[in-house]
Structure formats: structure tokens, C-alpha cells
Image (tube, rainbow, N blue to C red):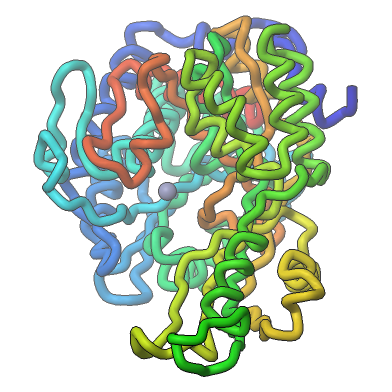
Length: 503
Ligand SMILES: [Zn+2]
């Protein structure tokens, strides 16, 4: 097994020889702060920050109040009116002893806990509660941002609270003194504008407040969440994010009278192009996917491995039908297979087709928009070449291919120590947990931090019921997270924080 895959097999004793740090805490305090994460989430949901337009300053001010209550002195930065950002730093012994320590030093540098303050819009239709009221009922906090990602921010705040309590218990001031037991600095940074790309949030923070982000490693959304499939509890950790390539194809034909149709019809050619472009194609075994598949093969129950091998051999939508039918019959949730198929290859999805001017005129031109999501390693030239190959040499003379937008995937070291610590912290609570690296099919602010040299992993732990479908809650209706999931997340993230940043 490769080094990378073994990080995800890490056993608790490797990283926590003296047991989990959270077990050394006053358990009443841990429970209290776990419960306060729900109160903090309610506060953050009520500080409505829908983007566009954002108005994140409301949520930023709410966060500042929570941090000030712990005796901290957070920094605020509002480069654009109403688009506030917040950061706070807790000191560890390494930087206290060596004030010129590089915060990015792998051995002693800082750990960054990193969140976004904005949320996507919520149309009241379909919701059973007011999305911005911060309703608590049936053991859940309901509202826009509960999952993405004010809930994860509340969990991060919970860890900060636990560290502040350590300082106060030792008679120290958490705003200025090193936190007892902490070697590395901990930075909590929350920024605006993630949901529309970060140009008015993370990009400005990186430009003007670089020290808010400079760390040896960063943890943000969205991994460490329980996904139950085929009776197995899987916890993906986001190690990379796909990039995108957007194409405009112009397909030519011959204008003519519709009473005498022929194969020169541009719309007919466009239909062929749509079909060829959409075909999924073979799995691409980039290193991230090799590690993912190795982790799945090693840990899936025997009954599920056959299904995995079948999925890996699929190349067309027709190939996928038998496994989809079996999953509907009870194996694993179809949306998981859909997500897995998407992250195992570059995808090409036709999204807009336009052609024709009148019912009785054969169209001489058609335009097709294709949204492509690409794996680490796929360059703009690679994406373009793949598109041309899909179109085929017979149709190529009739198709002009324009790559209109391109953003590379981002990827992190698959063998980073913190991946082992995170895996061990979860396995200590769930000995049958299957930890695995994933390339996220979506984009987060890691798109900005990773190219800036800050290793950024998606790890925002929540313990979820088998029935709870986390991915559907992202940007979905009735977004909610349980009180139990929040308290569990605080304890797990505290253990990971101390496992990595502790003495
Ligand atoms: Zn998010």
C-alpha cells in the first residue's frame, strides 16, 4: 500500500498514543461547548449573509462578538463596504519562543481553520421553516448555512472556545499568552464571497492580510462527514478540487428548405456532437484517484468490491445502468455512485444548445455550450484535445471549438501528516470507519489558497445518521445539522487540532 493510502489507514495509537486529547478535558465543559456550537450556529444563521449581494459584515460582526466573549481581540477587514472578513490568532509555544518563526514552517508553523461567511440564496418555497430564523427543533438547527458552512464555522469556534478555556484555567490570557499544551499557532479566518468565487473575499484577504492565511496547513469545508453506503460508514477527506473548462462549439451545416431534408442539417450534426461529447469515457487514474480506489478496495465489504470494479470499468451511460439498478434495490445511494463517477474522470456536460430560425428552414448553424470539470493534471490543451477527440475526425471539419473559460484543478500532498491525524481521530470513535481521499467535484476558496502555497484540506467533521443525505442539503431546502453532529464535530476537530498543533 502506498504511503498516501496508509495515511487513511492510520490507527488511533499511531497519532494518539495517550488517547484522544478531548478525553483529557473536563467532560462537562466539552459537553457545554459542544452545545454552545448550536447556539453559535443559530446566531450566525440569523446574521443573514446571502451572496449576492453578501452583506457578510453582519455575520462577521456576529462572529467577532462570539470571539470577544472568549476574551480574544479578533481583527476585522472590510475592503468593500458590507463585505467583512474576520481573523483571530491563538499563540502556541513555538512562535512565542521564536517570534521570527515562519508561520508556514512545516515543523512548527500555524494551523489555519478557515471558513466562509456567505451563504447561497434560499427561496422560502419548499422550506418547512424560515431559512433565516435559526430554528432549533427535533434535535436539529435549521437554516441556510447550517451545512454550508456556518455550521462548520461554529464547530471551529467551538475548538477556539476549548483552547481559550485551557488558557483561562491556567490563569492566562488567551488573547496574548501562549495556550498551554499548544505548540503551533492556531488561526481562525472567515471570509466573504466564497459562493461567487471569492474575488471580493479570499482574494482581497490574500492580497492585503496575507498573515491571516499563512499557515503550514489549512482545514476548511467539506469533508470528514459520515456517508453511509452499503452498510459502511465512509468519511471522505477533500484533498483536491476539480477545475473547469467551458466550451462554445459552433457547428456548421447548409441552409436549405425543410421540405427536402438532408444530413447537412447543423442541428442534426449538433445532436451527434451532443451524444459523443457526453459519453463518460474511461476512469482516469490520476494519483488522487489511485489513492481513493486503493482505500475503497482495502476497506469495502467483499460484497461491495464487485460493484466497485464494475463501476471502474464503466465507460458509457448504458454501462452504468446495471449498477444503478442494483443500488436502487438497496446497495448504496444512487447519488453516491453519481458523485463517484464524476470525480473519477474529466466530465463533459452539454448544457445549452441553440439553432434554427424558422420551422421550414434547415439550420446552417448551431451553437453548443459544454461545461467540463477536470481533474488535477488536465491542462487547457489537454481539455481541448479531449474535446476534439470526442467530436471525432468525421465531424471535426464542421465544428469550431472555442475554450472560453479555464480554471485548473487544485491538489494537495496526499501524504500529509494531518490526513493521518484526522483519519485516526475519526477511527478512534468509529473503528469500522472507512476514511478516503476525494477530489471534490465542486470549487471552494481552496482554489485561491492552494495556488498561494497554503495546503488546504476539506475537513469539517459531522457525524450523520444513515438517513441524512448531506450532499442534498448543500444549497438545498431544509438545510439542517443535528445538535449531536455539531458536538461530535467540536470534539473531533479539537482532537485533530491538538494532534497536529499540540506539544
Ligand atoms: Zn461552502
